[in-house]
Amino acid sequence: MSRIVVTGGAGRLGRSLVAGLAARGHEVVSFDRDTSAAPELDGVEQVAIDLSDADTTASALRDARADALVHLAAIAVPFSAPEDVILRTNSGLAASVLGGGVTAGIPKIVAASSPTVLGYGAPAGWVPERFPLDEETTPRPWNAYGLSKLVIEQSIRMLQRQTGDAVRYAAFRPCYVIAPEEWAGAVTQQGHTVRERLDDPALSAPAVFNYVDARDVAAFTDRLLEALPGIPNAETFFVSADDALARLPLAELVPRFFPGTEEAASVLTGTAPAFSNAKAKRLLGWTPAHDWRTELARIDTRTDVTA
Image (cartoon, rainbow, N blue to C red; front, side, top):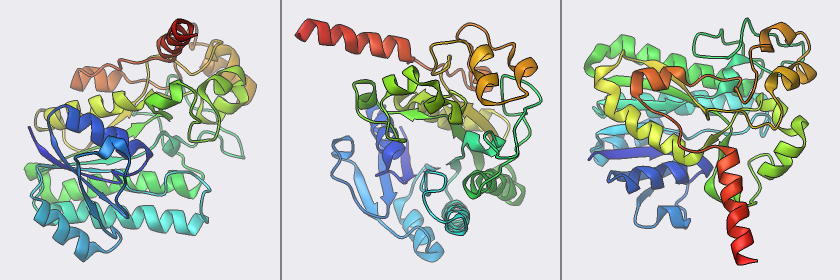
């Protein structure tokens, strides 16, 4: 198994990713601003570090002697800080961490982007050329967060042009991440429960009803790192569930919240999601193992047994 550095390992997605990689036998090191007492990180080596300091970061990555680097560290929520701070922070962290990984001689480098690079929810309107959305959909970010994530993807490609195939790169766009405890009622990143997001489509509409279980992101990352030497370099992947976080077909819901999408959304019948994970299935052989219907049914069954 590999020795993997995960930046942002003490964060919300980071904890699940670190735990999932460790459970698969990898030796994982978490680099973050602070160490964490979260149970998911029990037994995991943690390094408290200012990742915006490029020299310190490169030195720490050299010392880590890692086989792979997964970069998650970022301001993770749009508009949670001033726009200039988000753009400067996330873009700067990408330059520091990804460039530091190359300097340290790490042969596999992966970075987290976001579906928001596509620009859904733009105040001036948004009508994609087609559904489902995939890696060929034209990015049109309209805020600093989405733009900063596109900068991360472009940074990966920039570095690949510098190093060629001596380093293997990839970027991935995890959809709205749901942690295991959130199926049981813990609030999600936006402050609502999963059931509330299902009961009120207006809560899931801003993310175009996308989601993915955090455990599936860990499984995806494990498979991606294994497959990197044998797939085209510097690829980007959507990481999403096989269905939508919605009780009604998106052919009905999407036009309600995104005017002008009636024709494009007409293909989203049944439980079809707005985001395609076909590329990850095709190139990596990865398939998500979790969906909201099964997870909530499992919680309901458990509740009935203990009642």
